[in-house]
Length: 245
View 1: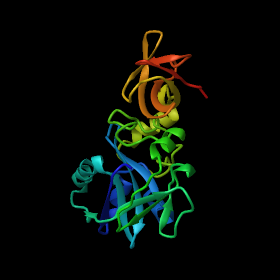
View 2 (view 1 turned 180 degrees about the vertical axis):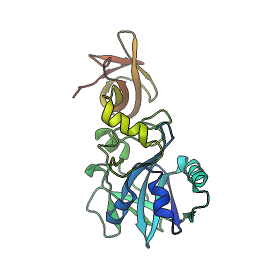
View 3 (view 1 turned 90 degrees about the vertical axis):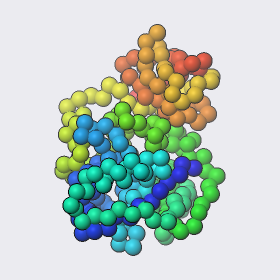
């Protein structure tokens, strides 16, 4: 399971501070787990993470490989705001059954189950990659990269962006993509037959179509240029097909 790190944010300016930075509405944290992201001013992905309340304080559940850079970026924006960011010794527990009393339903997709934050370590045999690929839920650092625009990654479908919350870093580009353009590229679920590791270029008729990303058996997530992704495609020694909606 992907390693996570948990941070607690305290101080009277915490909510206003986050509201001006993240893609989702911080007020939703009063009703459960919030999935959100931090973007560059150009609207590109820096990190995705979860926000939740515990003991009355706001906490962040971040991918371990992104956590240091995320905290560094948040600290850069903090300036004189009354906000303190401190890592806490909590561990992520996950499951796909009924949500426990101390757990939160994963807001991205019902198949992703629940998340809870406890002071004991957790070992889990669930194949989360298979669930993510099967339901087109992108993985931090694999399907989501510094070149990602979150709408191309399905953040609206994943409940990771709020178009009514007001300004945040990268909001202008994100709103323009939502209201003024038709997405010509993005993440899609594809079928793969043959050997091709993540990162393999996908081609069709000799032209680049995209990149193969997370894979679980015969299914994978791919970043595609939709107008070229027609018919059987190639990725290394594998054949890739996409059923366009």
